[in-house]
Amino acid sequence: MTLNNTQIVDALRHVDDPDLKKDLVSLNMIENIAIDGNKVSFDVVLTTPACPLKNQIRQSCVDAIHQYVDPAAEVTVNMTSRVTSRRKETDAMLKNVKNIIAVGSGKGGVGKSTVAVNLAIALSKTGAKVGLIDADIYGPSIPMMFGMLNERPTGYDKDGRTFVYPFEKFGIKVLSIGFFVDQSKALIWRGPMASMALRQLFTDAEWGALDYMVIDLPPGTGDIPLTLIQDFPLTGAIIVSTPQQVAIADVRKAADMFRNDKINIPILGLVENMAYFSPPESPEKKYFIFGEGGCKKFAAELNIPLLGQIPIVPAIADSGDSGVPIALDDQSPVSPAFLNLAETVAQQIAISNSIREIFGGGE
Ligand SMILES: Nc1ncnc2c1ncn2[C@@H]1O[C@H](COP(=O)(O)OP(=O)(O)OP(=O)(O)O)[C@@H](O)[C@H]1O
Ligand SMILES: [Mg+2]
Image (tube, rainbow, N blue to C red; front, side, top):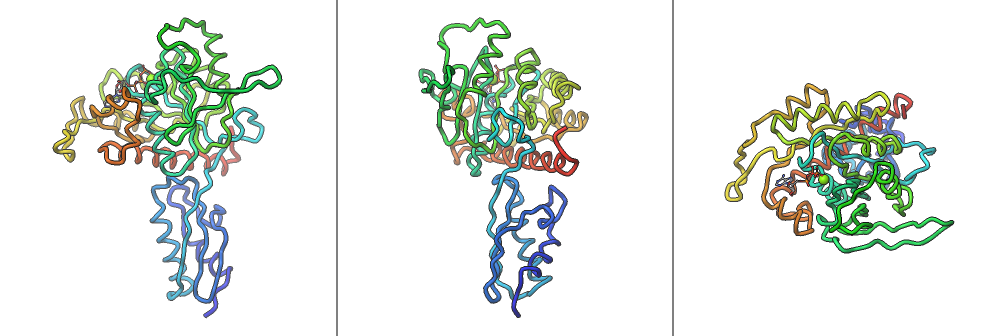
């Protein structure tokens, strides 16, 4: 039997993307169909390289060709990706950045920077192009976490403005306000100056094309996060909390900030940091030292997904001080937690972008 393109396309109309709940053909995810006798190959263009359902989708494609076209067909499915974006062409700032994700919390010290850094690294390990901005103007922690305390970015002048090149380290591009100031001196900036300096990290840096830009927000719901959020069309926000009631109570403040009428940023979900402790000698055991299920319950109450749970591990604190983020270490027992988080975040972004597209997007 000779195969033809129409048969292949019709068969693949029976395969749905499990997240987007539409078939791969309607979603324009099938490309480069090639047929040679009973051999067929094609590309499935996923919405993110971090897709956790990659193998499941591949198998469904093979099964559909066997079921609807020819049980003897030799099927090769190439899984590729093109990260989607709902940012409009008219978004002049960072126009080659497909998705901007802010990591915030209502409370300080819950692990925003730890989550932002390791999420950025885990996303890049899946093959995505990733940038990271440390927007914590008063207490930047990324220079330390990246082992770059004394480094200064290089730049060039154009039309009276100075543009900087973000650093490239550990596979991602990174800038922090900490690279421009003396870290040993306390920064006493008035709000407008701080906002201005922060803005320049976005507007006067050569970020190039990125799939995901992760922003590590300062703690709380003060004026800096607000200015930032209003100026830059964010794809969505991630809220970090620890399981203690006192931290959870502050999650509502952060959620209210993002959901505020004027701001209206989709909340991608909640991350529970320091969720449990696993002793190094028996990593299968989980001790919920701060209580179990608090964030899950609260996420349900706020109607947002619980994106991931990161255990409390001394190595995370050590890695923050040593300048080598833990997610780089494949052997570390917490790396899978960050990889899962990256996959879930990418999945939520793809879903959020597709909803906007279907409903005529942007608003
Ligand atoms: N899961 C974890 N296990 C162990 N230590 C952690 C974990 N998460 C964060 N820490 C440690 O807790 C401290 C605070 O974390 P981090 O700086 O990421 O919090 P933050 O929310 O960004 O704080 P700030 O509000 O000051 O910006 C750091 O020393 C960090 O190494
Ligand atoms: Mg921080």
